[in-house]
Amino acid sequence: MGFSVYFNQKNHFVLTRLSGDIDNNNLRNHVLNLNKLTEGISELREIADCRNIENISYLTVEGTKIGAELESNKLGSLLAIVVPDSPLFYGMARVYQTFSGNHREAVNLFYNIRDALAWLGYGEVEIEELITFVETAKNEFRPNC
Image (cartoon, rainbow, N blue to C red; front, side, top):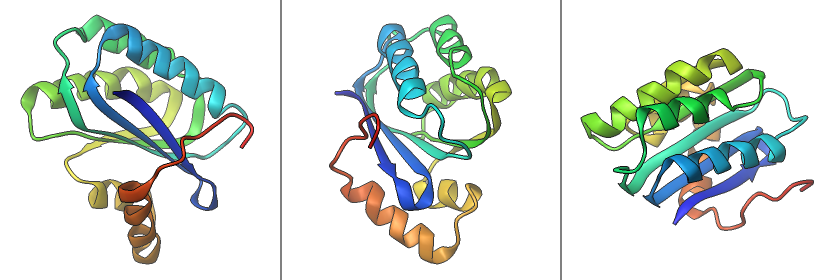
């Protein structure tokens, strides 16, 4: 439960799966860890897949804002946040979008992976390949891999 990060080097693509209970502390720790993992990698295209989060009752607007502001600068990078169909989850993702936007080229919110991948600029063949990657990713991203 929490955060799992997967890297598809061929497409400069990072997938973060969020699941279970998410709170201020584990969001903060994830952002700091991801900063380290992606240090020196430019022009990443990332998806934060939030569809398996079960509980955000301990995630506050202030905690979400702080987490977003801790992102290291990735000015050539794009982040797509995929959320479940819930006004609460969408609202918290919107807070993250607002406060992480200064650290990236752009951040956008989606309800499905296909639309997110298209927005990230992938063509149809790459989208199909990355959907398979998203559905089957098993090896977590490790530093210096």
